[in-house]
Image 1 (tube, rainbow, N blue to C red):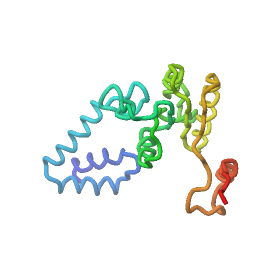
Image 2: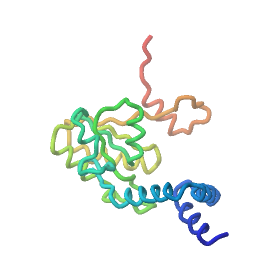
Image 3: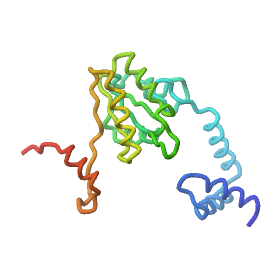
Image 4: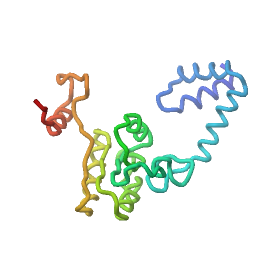
Length: 199
């Protein structure tokens, strides 16, 4: 294999979810593209990595000091949805069911990976709440062991705000899932978060 091709394959294979075979396919596709298209792509990636900022209020990705969501006066500023990563913001936004603000933690507590609470943007969340105006915090973290650890840590930290309503997103059996194949924790969450059905 060409050294140049091997170098590109090696770099692309560093991306999450991209193995060497996929990296080779992508490399060959790049070779078929026009040179200026590849240059535009490489330039966009370089600009993104060098110029992207984090919102000073919510830690979401931004081109400015405030991200477009925090800068939007039409958003409900009394509700903050706490998520792990920027991708979670995009997923919730795509549902078009939420009009409040967000707070991006930047991960979850994971002692095995050396991620402590101090490595996350928890203090920024607490500062925003202490400033006033926030009436509800929605904790939308994953149901992994690390997610649950982070959830309990946050719940403990939020006790200092007795008037704050703290909720979590519903957890349980997903639409189209069969109970037979669900694990015990998922079933427990589903039973705990059950709701009354109108008749």
